[in-house]
Length: 407
Image (cartoon, rainbow, N blue to C red; front, side, top):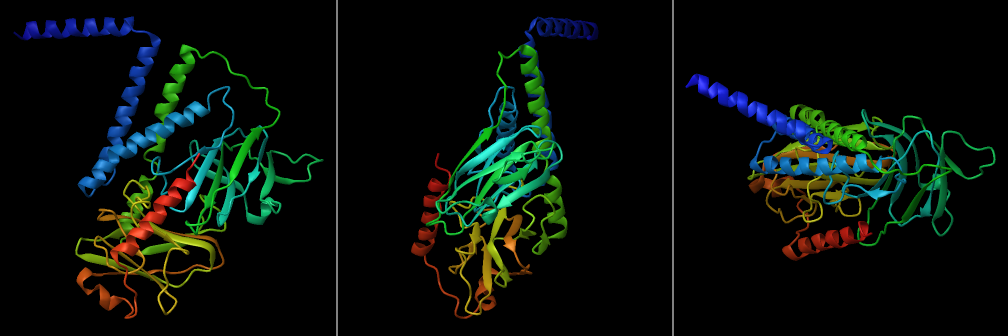
């Protein structure tokens, strides 16, 4: 019996090897691609913390989104592609605890070329463009915001992006570092009911690049690079999650930008761990900043749905107490007061503060209390928020989403 079994296995191996050898290079490349993606995805799902069934379910969705982002990233870098601004994180393709108030647009560029960015500013509280390196180790380079764009009264502006400033150029110039591979355009909205996005266009200057018919070898390389991109991109924020879960449970650490965001920003990172019968009260002084916000994220370092839930607040949305301080209540039940941070079913996850163009920092104080005792930890004159008002808040969020991400 053992001899017969061995013979069957040898025959099966020979047939399988023959079938593989007879397959086209494209089929073999595709098989290799799917094997690489499968192995990387399984490793990520095994290594990330997933305290609840919700976190586990979101993990598979997270991988699907990151694979899609990796595919697009490699395709837009293919020879012959022109640089186009494309919308980033919306209700999908979330990554790196995307900002609840931001519209992200990005383009793949070359550090040895030159570009013209022009258009018309909208009414967002803050507009910023930044040069970055997204492939490999992330790095942020030059940036321009606000008055630095020198827009006219109608909001029209033009920026030259190049390694050296031409002697005859009199307009706005942003130096292009050789390691740059991406241009990121951000708009941050404060008043979601009235502020509108602008229109922006990117052109490469003096390019002679043309496209050629694709070859099997190029496709094989594209598949390998996509798998490598996915393997590096998907687990990139695991260290942030592990650090927060270990050191920042129900507290906030504030710090100036460490080079990953705009230089004038102050960020506050924390981690909430709240049971169904508890509430986390977050109290802070009013920040001195152009725009500030607080929002929640999940274990995959994605923003929790801030369109269908009040999982974020900014300076226009939040309501100050009579003493001038801001108090947020993170709880699974609607507390019926202003500034309810709804975790949307997550028992734990990230807390992120952003202070844009800040003149000073704040130090939020967090207190975990029984939900039944919440009233005793808030000012007596805290106003009540009923179902109709809460639904109105959510309606404004959905209406703004349709405007922010419209084509």
